[in-house]
Amino acid sequence: MTEIRIELPSKRNREESLRRFAQQLEKFTEDVGMKQSARGWAYQLEGMKLITKAQLDLVENLINECRKRGYLPIDFTAEEEGRKFSGIEVPEKKTPLKYLRGWLNVTINSAEYYTPNWWLKEKYYIQMLVEKIDLKNLYEPICKEYHIPSATSKGWSSVIQRGEYARRFKEAEELGLKCVLLYCGDHDCDGLRISDNLRKNLEDIMYVHWEDGTEGYDPCDLIIERFGLNYDFIMKNHLTWIDNLITGSKKNLASPSHKNYRMPYVQDYIKKYGVRKCEANAILIAKEAGKKLCRDAIEKYIGHDSLERFEERRQEIRNIVNDFFGRTGLDKELRKGIDLINKDEKDNEDDGT
Image 1 (cartoon, one colour):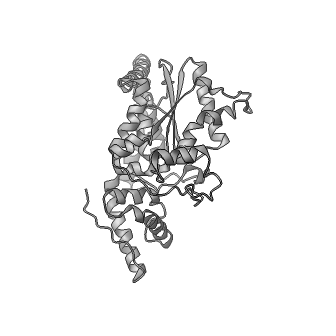
Image 2 (tube, helix red, strand yellow; image 1 turned 90 degrees about the horizontal axis):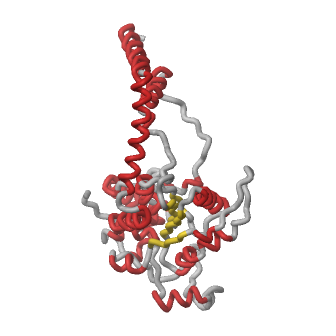
Image 3 (cartoon, helix red, strand yellow; image 1 turned 90 degrees about the vertical axis):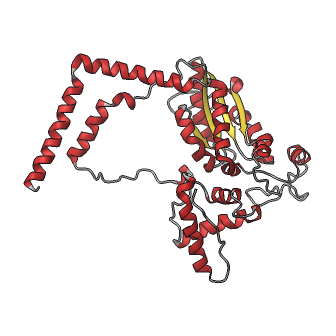
């Protein structure tokens, strides 16, 4: 782990101290090993005792200021997928023949790229929602291992997002699978309420239909599990409590002047946990424990041997393709094509073209 000290910029010599702050963060990026939001970075530094929890907002703002001023790359932090441009075409850097050679190699190794229905022989079908982009980035590699779709809900998820994952649940149930929605979000009044209302949110759109005629999904049999952040995990891993109940709209739920202050979900939360909250980003302080939390939540349903079962299915595909190659010799012909391209490249180099 790189030794790092964080010197927070001061009003005096502001520009120079901002540059030093940015340089210190960039030295730390390789050790972190993943993209995270500005807020996630603040939790990372707080977890290493480089800043206090009272400085979380300050550090988040400083990182964004450094990005705007050019002291940090604009893509230094993780961004929500929905904000990215689509339809961008990047010119190919390879020559047409090198490009062709790549496709021939892909064809020879097609068994590694073929996507079967991994769930056909399974009992459960799982999807995952998380509250913050930092959790998405932390859990996505694990979800890919288990072939589990994952997304950020960013609060109360949109109608179209609900419709899309509900449609996949509908298709899975029609195959005889039991469906599971795993959720990980903030530990605060609204964070707990969001997970409590996931089923109702799906019930609200159960009568929708799609342009292709597919009808909506009835979530009555759906298993919904909030696997984090929960109180026991927060306490066991010494995650950071923020001593307020200020919402994303900067309003204070703990204030009697807030319109929701006297609602049961707020009062019950305050009685049980006090005027404090733990944001989902705080799990970055205990990344390994957070990864185990995710993996355990998945394997609770599909078992500890699920990765071995998925590998067996991959091997079945390899066997089918290799059998075909053995009967037809197609792979040998494809390799001849690759050899011809290599020879053509060498001839051109010898000719100086």
